[in-house]
Image (cartoon, rainbow, N blue to C red; front, side):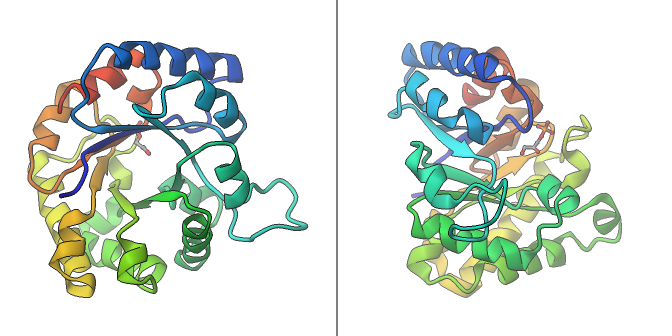
Length: 251
Ligand code: 13P
């Protein structure tokens, strides 16, 4: 059966020293606990090597927040999936709405990134989600379906089985406006049905689908209690250990 996961996305926050301090603090707290979910932290690429050293890999997986859509070569400033893997990260967040919006990522480039991530043994945490206008026009299902179809449905069932999905309604990211547990459940169930139609019930039932968007200790329990919500992708509340652990404790 699918794994419950609480993943943090630090975004462009924390210096190296601050990041290592946060990872170490988290590691220390989690060492005393029996976890009922997987825990991942998505850190700036430049921090990965040191953060990997600071945490117990059995309890905390480390993710990059992006990787290149090219294998290697003259792509100044880019970081390849092979490089990410070589630092000790096990995951890579792909297709975050901020990358789609500010850095022009398309379903086509995300398809290429996904292939390279998988080829290098990384687990993609693949983000999908609609903007407010689309939600207001009741187009959210079509939007997430197209995002999944265009970026992921070229994969074999075996390859797709390695993907973690994260549904992040853009209107809920960093806004303090959280999807209601019912809204989250409704679209997570729909996303699972889209996966089931393509790959069958086994693959769909084994796919972890995380919710992201203003998830906090105060609302995580209600969200995670829903049948098709398998954890969270956490932004702001992942930036301090107390809040992040509060969300982990929701399981
Ligand atoms: P917030 O939790 O800050 O809303 O961010 C969510 C997010 O974008 C995680 O990837």
